[in-house]
Length: 454
Ligand code: ARG
Image 1 (spheres, rainbow, N blue to C red):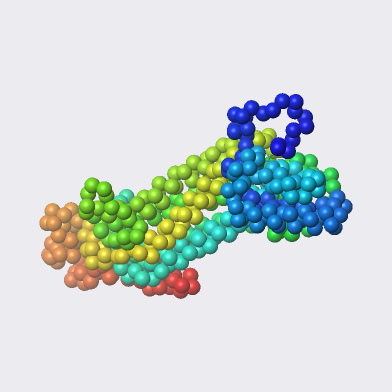
Image 2 (cartoon, protein in one colour; image 1 turned 30 degrees about the vertical axis):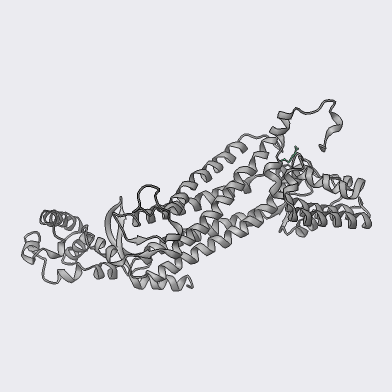
C-alpha cells in the first residue's frame, strides 16, 4: 500500500507506478533506512512521542527486519513497494501493527532519503579510500621493484628523455595521493546529518538534532532545513572525485597499453588480466586496461547527469532528485571495480628491461645532454639547441646514435666539443644529472620512496 492514499479518489496508472517507483534502484539503501529509523525512533521517544515500551518494540522489530533482509534480500524487490522507505514502513506495520504507523511522526521521506543516502556515501567513501590506498601501495611496490629500469620518457608520444620506470610509477602515486585527499575532503564535508529537517521547514517536534546526528555517526547536524533536504552536493562531489580518479586510471591504462604493445614491448601484462582473440591465436589483449579506460566514459556521463539534474531545481525537494542514485551507485561500483582491477594489473606486470633500455638509447633522447654540454663550455643555450639539431640531422642521415659520431664530426659542428663529451652522452649520465627534487635520478626515486614511508 502507498504511504499517501487518503487525498486521492482514483488509483495511479500502472505506467505511472512503474515510472515513479524507485525501489528497483534504492533497495540498496535498506540497511541505512533501518539504521536511520532506529535512530529516529529513539529521537521521537525522547521528544515524548513514544513510550519506552513502544520504542523498545519498534527497535526490536527494526533489528529483526535487518536480519531478515540480509538473509533474504530478494523479498525487497518482490514486495512491489514504491521505494525503500515504504518497504521498511510496510514491514514494520506487518510486525507491530499500528505502532509501526507512529514511526514517521515528525519525519518526511525528504529528510529520510537525504539521511539514508549520506549514510551510504559515508560507508562507500570509506571503502573507496581503502581501495585507493591499496592501489597506491601496488604502485609504490612497482616503483620499488623497477626503481632503476630505464625507459624512454615521452612528450607528444615522441621519445624525449630517458627516465626510469620508478619515476613513471611515482608520477601516478602523486595522482593517487591527490585522489585520496580529494575524497577525504568530500567525506569531511558530507559528514552532517539532515534528519530532523522534516519535509522542508524543520520538524515540529522537540528533537535533539545534535544527539540524533551523533547517534548516527555524523559529526554534526545540518543547519538549514531547506538546504538539508535539497542538498545533493555530496553526490556531485563523489561523482567528481571519481571522474578525476578515473581520468588518472585511464591515463595509466593508456600508458600501459602502449608499453605492452608489440611496438613498444617494454612490459608484459600477466595472463590473469588479459584475454585471447577468437580468431588470431597469437594475441594477448590488454582487456583489463581497456575496460578501465572505457568505463571512465560512463563515470563522466553520470557526473554530467547529476549536475544537469540539479541545475535550476527550485528549493527544496523535487522528484527530479530521485534520479540522483542510479548514476551515483554506478559511479561508485565502476570506480571501486577499476581501482581493484588496476591494482591486480600492477601486481603482475613484468618489465622487459633490455627492450626498454634499448628504446631509451634510440631516438636521440640524449640530445638535451649534448646541448647542456655545449652550455657548460660557454655556448648560449639557444645556440647550442640549434647546433645539436644539426648534429641530430647528421646522425639520422648516418643512421647512428649521437654518441657513435666520431669526435672530428662533432667538432665540425662546434669546435668546443672535446673527448669528454662522450661520458656525458650515456644513459647513466642523463639520469644521474637529474638529481634534483622531483627528478628521475635513481637517488631521487629512492628518496621519494623513503619520504612516502615505503
Ligand atoms: N524515492 C524518493 C527519492 O529517492 C524518496 C523521497 C520521496 N519524497 C517525496 N516527497 N516524494 O528521492
